[in-house]
Length: 108
Image 1 (cartoon, rainbow, N blue to C red):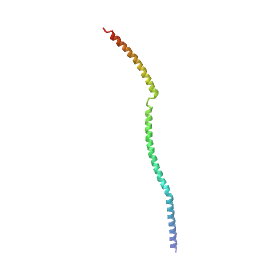
Image 2: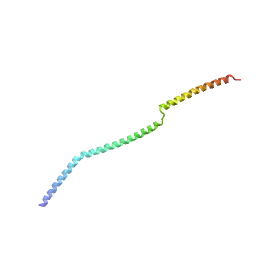
Image 3: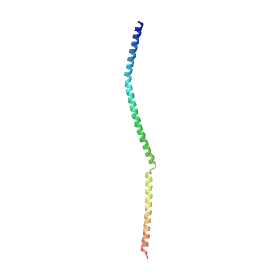
Image 4: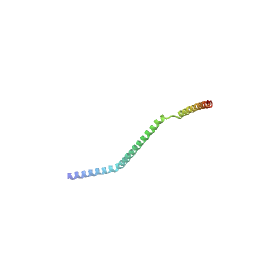
């Protein structure tokens, strides 16, 4: 008699454990699905961050190159200097032309 009662109690405990396990699996399934989706989103974010790092490096390289380029003010100063040199060369050309005319007109 004691063996039958013990067997019935073991069966009841096993049934309760299997029902509890079934409920736990049923309740935790959405959490596992959400966890898988979160992992997928994290992977996508990591890929996007790698792409952004590449863009950041390229932008930084362009900014570094821009520091060495002349500014609008620098180019304006160069233009002014070239204009003054051209003016001086025009004067020198006129003088050379007059000297050439003088030498050609006074041939022996």
